[in-house]
Image 1: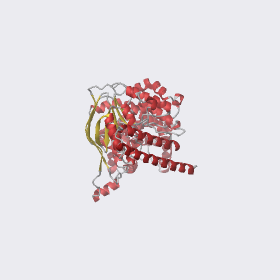
Image 2: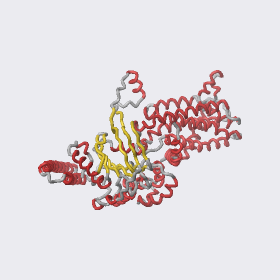
Image 3: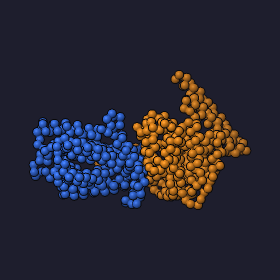
Image 4: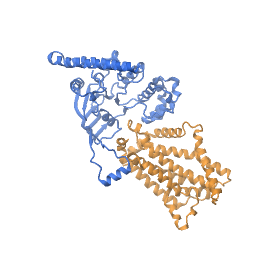
Length: 344
Length: 260
């Protein structure tokens, strides 16, 4: 078995390399034949690469890529979402800077600290700028995508918008109730039943008891857990856990929705359902921030895109314009930066 | 510093506090067969063993040693468990704190509250032992609330200080372990203060936990109002520590996430 898999892997690796070579050729073609529109060609390119990587994953038994809320059939559904931008400001970010200390020797014990302090060995801290002086304003009803390679600062920005982190410098001003869907099932207690966890997790998300009680049936119903809701969740499958987490997290009607690719969970059927649910949450008037590694998804959901690179705001503008430029740059990006990123 | 946000946050997250307390209490004896019964059994068994040792082996003459001991033991345990729990509360809930915004002091406050509930449950043992040993029930017993309340205030303050410090320096945990052990021996839990010569007995008065224990013993065993001087000193220490705790917790809480 092991040998089989290894030889399979070799074959796959070869085929991927082949694909890359072909892609190189195609890229040259673009230069020759300028009649192709850029985005179209790159779309085709990526389509090919994507097929390869999908096969690769399937053969390893890992299943296909996880983060499509919308399967191909419903491609255009999101575009039909109403888009009402008002003049009111939802989030205003001014000169936002986030700096992390990158101490190579992290001093977290007292002895070391005291000794080093005495010996004057505490080195000047190396700073890492996760976000560098970002400023932007988002109006109510806008759906804003955030793109960038790995390590660009996307998640840090979302965490700051959600209030989990405080920025080193700068200001975030937000109006309205924020629902951050950064993590599903935060604080689940594995000895608790599903029912108890609905209340615990709900409380952690800041919901009130009455609210949870009134929405309880709806949550259970949506989670499709049925009588399992009375079973300690340590016996749940991971799919069941994420269904429960999703059902609790999305029970609110927020003004500002912050999404970090937790979008789709569970089996195919639930994926569709959770996608629909998010869509209904995104209905008119809700401001949405979406981080996604799928440019396609961003194109479908957003009209405006912020492109981050190494903490800097590279571009802020119309979705197609930014995405096209992004894809162009992506061709020169390193494999590490592109890990997990889908450019189609 | 403690603006309106503090109040509105508290109202908003009151339900979270309840849920956290529930979780702590349910989680405390999880997987044990007797569960919450251990809150009774633990002090009861300790009391039996220590009563045997100190009444028969060391032949100490304390009137009604079981009640004398239990009062001290339960109150010391309340302080010890509450502060230790609060100390671990930020690191222990790192997973949540890193992902969701919520007022972080809730975790420290939550453990203190759940230890208070635990203390109240184990008071049943004290009442039972008082019945069994034919101890008189003085009406002043109700004033036990005063030292216990002040002790809880102090525990919240100390807990907030420890939670902040441990987030940055894990070592505090071990240092505090030694400290609480010293504190236990210095709190006259299983010996009378008379073991020290008269001129050194004031040393006990420097220990606020002892002040609370002495106050409770006045109310339960002595049938008098808790020593006023002790209560005033304890109250001042408790509120000063609470304000110091709140101050440093508020000052550093935004940095926690960078160290978790």
